Image (cartoon, rainbow, N blue to C red):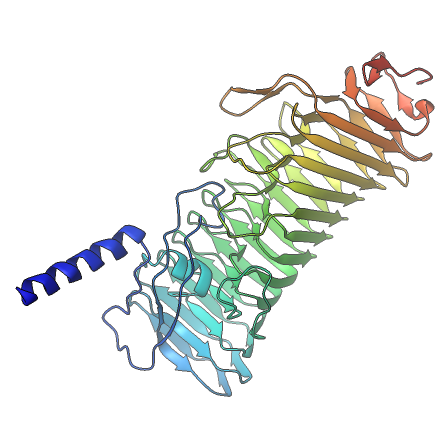
Length: 462
């Protein structure tokens, strides 16, 4: 009887873990020297807005085909793993480590869910434990599910807003290629730090941003290089952290160009960003290039998101250039060349989408900036637009919004306040409706149309 009960209990435990899709396995390889960490609650795959749950975590069991646990300097070595939930190279130390010209290859699909997303299980190259690891040159290739390329885990247990343990990855001139789902190029979580220079990163799987972060956040700084994503729900950058990218080329061939979730930020300096978002993923019902939202999954704290772009170019091949939903966002643009190739020519939409629990609130600050296209603000949404330092907006503001499925989202404009300084102008391309205006009416070029402020036509326009 006791034996039968024990078997039944074991079977129930296995079924429960399988249902959570978060089982931590060490595979067929040697499990000696493995370390573990307690996983956190489940959440959405970070690069798949509204996507299926990534699976709750059980205990995270770490393993590496090669493990470095103290100060080391290695050059020209090959590191490989074909074992499930085993990294090809795992660095777990508080000491400094230097890796030059590595050849890292990883296969072996994982179903570890959040263990892979949050804590680095099954990554090709995993750095943890407080180490500052410097990687120069070489290649990192992963061909497996849940196998991020280079993972910096800061050890804070996935607690948003908590400090990390100092884990820092400094990586330069490395080629990183991933093909499996849930396999970002450079991945940062748990308060980790990543500093990347002149990388060539290409990802092809679902939920596999080239520059990827997840629960617990961290700090990511990128300078130079090319970052390309090809999969569904895989923007070039996905932010649940503070990310700054400079002098880089960013390309997304199927998904949004960048996504920011919740109380996090992306800063682009002199970057060239191109996106062709042609498939909606998860709860998303709009095509867009810059998506700012809150999924309420717990992967990011709620608060004001920030997207700042200075210089460079932004090419949006399909859908809205900017889309804000279920969160508050501040968008700041300065001297960016924006090209919108979509025939509907929507510059910004602030409205409901496939998530709930938050408001749709956006501030658009344009400095020395040329803007073209429609700005659409849903009837329950809010926009504040400030044009300064010689900025020019050619377009209209309205509230008639239809999503990519053809469903009507809004028919009336929400709350919109527009401020023009004395050096900036707005040229109307259709009748426009706002609730507040600050500036000189002579800065409005009517072009045969009317600007209504609280239902009253603004007089004195040019």
